Image (cartoon, rainbow, N blue to C red; front, side, top):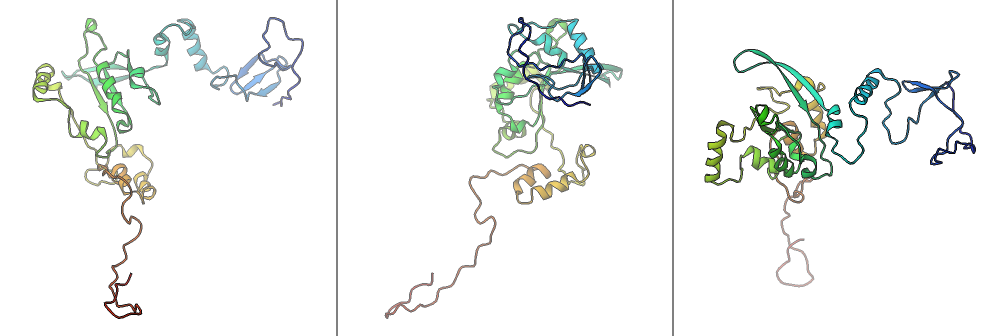
Length: 296
């Protein structure tokens, strides 16, 4: 492997190239993985890759095949149109062999679209999506607007002309929240904000599909029943949380024992030290006659 020593910018660059970047006096003809090669076979470690790109290496067969597949479909449509046709290449498809309602084996295919909220508005991220269902991860950390704008996007795929949806809904997972979190009232308590008339109308339309189902998992240290998903966690995972949250009892409740957190405003009184016993009063000389004052 050869080190590169940057030379002065070449003054005789072709006139048809803009002088945006100062080009060095070296040229590469091919690459493999993290290495670049000149025409004479000299090998260099590529520590730059490019400007504003992801460093995925050179000539990776799977990446090359994906690029060729996309190039055969659509290379670039600029920034003037919706990018759905391009983005679909980056979505994940999963296939499962399942047993249907009649007891017969069948295969289902699920297309997953992943979206990160970040600092974006829920309306901007979710508007225009045509979904069968929506899965919200760590829902107690999301603003309620994600549900409010996400729910109306479900039940739209497949469309009615293709047979319509056999199911629509929102799945929301979360650790036991503080009881003042919106997920507690909505999902746990089932407070939908509907009056009796509105609720009856929805029941007539949706039938058994109306309502919220809530399932609470056992805590991380529960013995009977044991915690779920424990086989996918490192050994001693929840025991380690006991150490991490030793001084955070509310975190222990929520993240270890899966119990709802208490609402706390301000700091607890004497959280780290015990109150001293109240002192009894005793006479103290005041230098004058009369009733003695209390000790302070």
